[in-house]
Image (cartoon, rainbow, N blue to C red; front, side, top):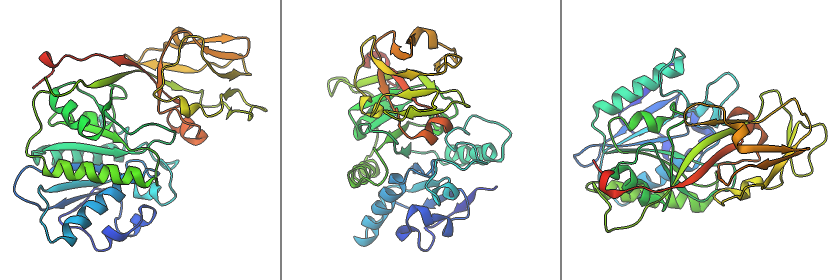
Length: 342
């Protein structure tokens, strides 16, 4: 595997649907597009092949400037990731790693192309980095940051008043880019939703017109931030279901579990049922510690919360549950503008 580096938009790129992008791009590609002089804006899309909003919004932005005969206000560096998985609308293929878990070193060929991207982006002196994603479950549109410095918060707030701060997993793209520029991830709802595409389109146009990212927010707004405290996974060999789909399942979670996302759940809330007493859910905190016994209580067959939490990214897609996780738990998080600026 090698990274394709293109210095212009390839023919057909702007009118190709995500699942056919493999016909235009032979693997992961960094497309460098000229604009007005200045530091380039770095955008990442299709790190997950089933998350199409980013590339559709980017196509729409470039078409807008082309059709109006205008030069881009900033140069754009666009990373188009897993076009092979996009072909079948999968997060990643069985023989592949998750393309948003390869950015912290390693020996895989995917780790090597990730390090090449990091080096190229760093050397370009980027204005900012924006990684565009969708969620499989029902979630509001929100931004994620890995640092609480003011430029990160201000950039994230341009997309959504709902912000999530996390430091694990460390292997995500946004964490790597945060070492040298303001870096955020945006979550734009479910793939195919026109409102998500439009929201990202408007946000990217704002970013292109932005002369600088403010270094503080004092007196402007009060950021509403959640802190991710843990990631919930099921045993790899487990059989799972949702709602009435409990027959022959080790775990069956409540129906429409994803509708609980971003709503505080009090202690003793029912999450689901466990049929196999030899299996437990795994709950890993930001220090890579197993804290399942602090979070869940198994009352006969019921799975209940021991403490109040705010779920996010909980999904009812069984493939994604096994490939990645069931979801995350968060808590509200206060930040202080006096010591969070750079």
